[in-house]
Image (cartoon, rainbow, N blue to C red):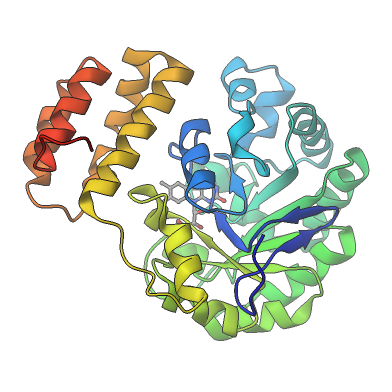
Length: 330
Ligand SMILES: Cc1cc2nc3c(=O)[nH]c(=O)nc-3n(C[C@H](O)[C@H](O)[C@H](O)COP(=O)(O)O)c2cc1C
C-alpha cells in the first residue's frame, strides 16, 4: 500500500485497491497473461477484455473462457457489454462466480457492431436504460459494479456529469471516464475540463483515462479531480509503466524502462501465455502483439519479421537476447 496525495489506495465499494492506477480493458490484449504482467508492473486494478453478456447467456464457451481469472492478477474486474438489463444481471452473476472482484460495464465502446446492438457507447444515449442495467446488476451480485464511459458521443459534448450521477444513484462504485468522445475512437486529445466536471459531479471515485503514458500526464488528470488513472496502450509495450508512473507521482525520476527490461517483460509474457494456452498457441497469440512490444525500438521491423517464424519459447528467448545485444541474460 502506498499513501501520497496523488498516489493512494482507493475504495471501490467494499474492495480496496492498493493504488489508484488501473489497467484499462483492451479487447485482444488484456488476457490473463497480460493482466498478471500489469499487476506485477504495479497496477492496482486490472480489467479483462470486454465479454458479451448475450454470448454468456447462450453458453458460448469462448466467452466463458474469457471470464477465467488467475491467482496473480487480483484485484481484477471482469468487463461485460450488452444492452439488456436481464442479460447483464445474469452475466454479472457469472462474472462473480468466476471470481471477479469488481464487475465492470462497457458503456464507451465506439465500434459499430457493438453500438448497433445498443451496447457500448450507445448506452450513453439512454441514461434511464443505463441506470436500469446498473441497478439490476448491483442487486444481482455482492461484488461492486463499476462502469466505463466517455465524456460524450461527439466532440464538445459533455454527457459525463449526468451519466455519472445516474451511475452513482443506481449503485455503481467506480467510474472510468475516457476523456475522448466516442467519435474520436482512441485518438486525439482528452478533454480535461469535461473530466473535471464529471469528477466533481459525484462522490464515487472517477478514474480518468486516455493518452496517459507518464507521470506528468497522470498528474494532470489527478489534479483535475480524478481519483485515479486508467492506462491502456502505454501499458501494452510496457506493463511496468504503472510502477514508473507511481514513482513519478511520488517525486521520483519515473525513469522510462530500458529496452532490455522491456524484452525481459516480453519474455515473461510469452512464458505466461505458454503456461495458459500451451507453447504453440501462446506464441501464436503473442504474434498479434509483437508490434506493440517492439514499438520505438531500433531494428524493430526485422525482429518482428523473425518473431513471426518462431515455434518455441527457446527460439523466442534466443531472438530477444540477440535483439537486445546479448549474450548475457535478458
Ligand atoms: C485495441 C483496443 C481494445 C480496446 N478494448 C476495449 C474494451 O474491450 N473495453 C473498453 O472499455 N475499452 C476498450 N478499449 C479502450 C481502452 O480501454 C482505453 O479507453 C483507450 O485505449 C484509451 O486509453 P489509452 O489512450 O491509455 O490507450 C480498447 C482500446 C484499444 C486500443
